Amino acid sequence: MLFYLFKQPAILCTMSLVSVIKNCRQEFAPVVPFLPGSDRLIQFDFTVENIELTADTLNNTDRFCNYINKKLAAAGAKYGIGGYNEHRTVYSRSAVFDAEKPGEEPRRLHLGTDIWGHAGTAVMAPLDGMVHSFAFNDNFGDYGTTIILSHELEEIIFYTLYGHLGLDAIRNLQAGKLIKKGEVFATFGIPEENGHWPPHLHFQLIKDLKNWKGDYPGVCKFSERELYLANCPDPDLVLQINQYTSFQ
Image (spheres, rainbow, N blue to C red):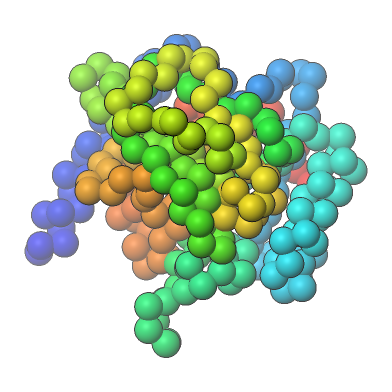
């Protein structure tokens, strides 16, 4: 019963947030530079179905970077995209996502959208926001440089999380700073800055940040899927670019 009482308000609040975001879809600026009809976007698959991604590739950051770059180049694509609500084998590369105790369930269900591209790619605010918090989560496989913005739409407060950024984004940054809609406030980081991943942006919507600062789970246990997805709606509600995706 306690679980039900906790879970039900989260679902109701998220549905309200989803409705507000849908009503305001015309107001959002792009989060990354992308020209529909000109730039190509391809879908990446990091589930068990992708047999090209061997352990040798995943466990070596340089090889993983080469895999991403070759896929983009072969498709003539500016970005690769995907990952929301995706059950991924890719997280086996890092102890960050392992179970706390042997035999327990690891974290494998992705809660954001990843946009894979080149280091230095601009990251922009989709609407006016304030810096809630930031951190350098420098564990292998973690977010690396991370910024969380708070926003308000029709009296509903919510948050956007940006992970795997370049370190320059948080130099001299302060909580409470206003970031204007369309403002470039970060870039895709290199592996040494972004948690040792191929350059990309992890973009996530969060209704209730609870007590987290500079961090929030971007991956959960599959058994906790409904609870976390209720608090983290589909990022494409804001990104609005999945419709331009080509599948590989």
